Image (cartoon, rainbow, N blue to C red; front, side, top):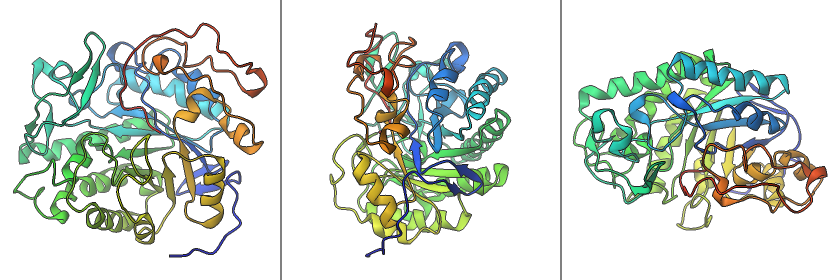
Length: 386
């Protein structure tokens, strides 16, 4: 439906639930595979996020809720004392710069491999259906994900409890809130889709039953930290993670309608194919927005003009940028002053332990067309956001 122009600015302060934002520009969650031993945020993480603290909101990279939840090499967790202490250094640094930061919590589900599971066990999913996808194991490079086993009905309350516990630890670590990763084929999303969920119990079959896990998880985390500090990310038609559903419009109309009842801080929608075409499949995003009473965040391929128009027209309340934040730590300034974006991003440095391609991208006034000493530290083409 047509929305009257609201004359709102991408650069004005706003709020998302309990979150106070300096502007409507969001740093999307970006997997960088730089966690240290015991999956503690790496030694350069605080500097990396602090450099980007002018974003109205930072959504920290996807972070495991448990050891079982891991699906990629060197991604951090938020369930041990050491991990919480590591994240506290990050949140303290961001807050010292006046930033607002939440953490994205995930369980990768079937998007994992036995190499990441205790005693080489199979990863878990809604059903024993293997995803046509790859993951990254540092010692092996890109490898096919493993065949999952179907979660037993008795195990599902434990998954929900793990999300709740990790959310509590995130607040202890100083995060301003939490985003649930309900996108890209990971566990919560895999339960939603009839392509990956063939269950016949309370968590499979009808749309209502397939949506049960994400809704029960949302309820549990909202009870733990407050719904006004909680966001949820969805990707209705992205093929990332081998997502398939016979009727995504009907499915997500229902899911968004139900999520609206919680009073969330925001809903984060990936439009189209992650990192690719925004019109890969027919889908009515306006129908979703009309079903959600709250802050609406959009993502995927937005440039300055598109973002400004989305905010001014009311088609979005927040716009998240992913890869643009990697090589433009001062992205907010570049957008505000209409400065060119850096052409310096090196794909070979997206993932891995080195500070190169992580904390050494220059701000606009220092950019001279080349980035010193960028090393090829990894060949992972994994789950970095957009």
